[in-house]
Image (cartoon, rainbow, N blue to C red):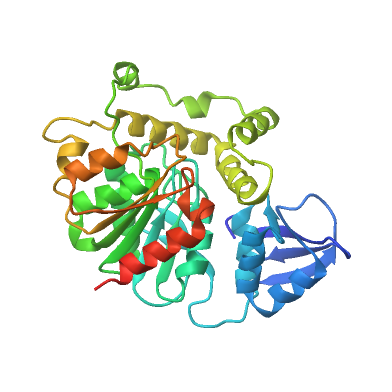
Amino acid sequence: MPRGSARIRLAVSDGEDMDAVISDDSIRLRSAGRTPDAELTADSETWSRIANDVRGGMEAFREGRLSVRRDLHLGVGLLAATAEPTPGRLRFDSVKTASGRLATVSAGEGPPLVCLHGLGGTKASFLPTLAALAETHRVIAVDLPGFGDSGKPLRAPYDAPFFARSVVELLDALELGRADVAGNSMGGRVAIELGFLHPDRVGRLCLLSPALAWLRERSWARLLGLPLPKLGLLQPNAPGLTDVIVRRLVPGGSTGWSAAGVDEFLRAYRTPRGRHAFYESARRIYLDEPHGERGFWKRLAGLSPDALFVWGRQDTLVPIAFRGHVENALPSASHLELDCGHVPQLEAPGRTHRAMCEFLLAS
C-alpha cells in the first residue's frame, strides 16, 4: 500500500456495505464508516464470483458489474491480495530501481511483456491486457516516473529518453535481460525510444496509438522550448473544478473504465509533483523534433525491433493519417486499424489483444 494503511469500502448493491481496514499486515472488516480510500461496488452474486476467483472480478469489472472508484491501485490490489496464492496471480509491487521506486501490477507466467501507459494514465489502463494475456505471458504494467504511485522527481526531464532509461532500470531490478513492450500514446513513444536506444533489451513492440512527432508547424515550439518555471508546483489545487472539467473532456468520464481512468489521473494531478510531471511530459511530446538527422522520422527508419502499430479510426489525438507516414518510414512494420479512439486496449480489447497475442507469439 503506497500510504501504509487504507480503508476500502466493499459496497453490496443488494446487501450491507462493509469496510476493509488495512494496517501493517492485518485486515479487519468493520461497518461502513468514514470516507474510504477506495470503493468497490457489486451485487452479492458478483461478490461470490470474486471470492472464488479474482479473474471473475476482472470480468465483472470489464462488463460493468463491478465498479472500482477513487483508487484503482488499492481497489484491485485488495482483490489481488486476497485471491488464492497461485503461480502467476495478479499482484501489485513497488520496485526499487537505480533512480527511484516504480509501482507495478503484474500477472501470468511466460515471456515478459512490459506495458507503458499514456500521458495522464497509469498502469490501470492495462488491467484488461493483464487479464487477456496472462495465459501466455508474464505481463507487467508500470506507472512511469511522475505518474500513478511511482516516484515523482522534480529534476527529471520527463522526455522519451528519460522514460526509456527508467524502463531499462526496471528490467534490471526485475533481473530481466529482455522483454517485449506494449505502449499506448506517450507509452508507445517511449517504447519506440527503447527500440532506438536499447534494442538489445527489447523483443517486439506493440504500439497502440503511439504519440508521434508532429509533422505540421508547431507554433508554440519556441516559447515552450524556453526554460519555464515549474508551473505545476505553483498552480493552486482546485479539486472540485478540476474534476468537473476533466470528466467533461473525457467521453463517459463518469462511468465504467473511463471513470476509473479519470479517478487515477486526478489522484496524481491533485499533487504538485504530479501536475509538474504531467505538464513537463506534455511539453516534451509537443517539442519532439520531427526533422533532421536526429529527428524522429529519420530515426524511425532505423528501428530494428519488429513492431505492430494499432490505429483507431476515431482517434482525434493520433489521426489515422499517421499510418501512411509510418509505412513510408518503416515498411517492415505491421498495422491494424480498429473502429475505436485513442485507447485500443480499453475501447476494443478483444481485437486488440488477439492481434497482440498473435504478433508476440509469431515465429
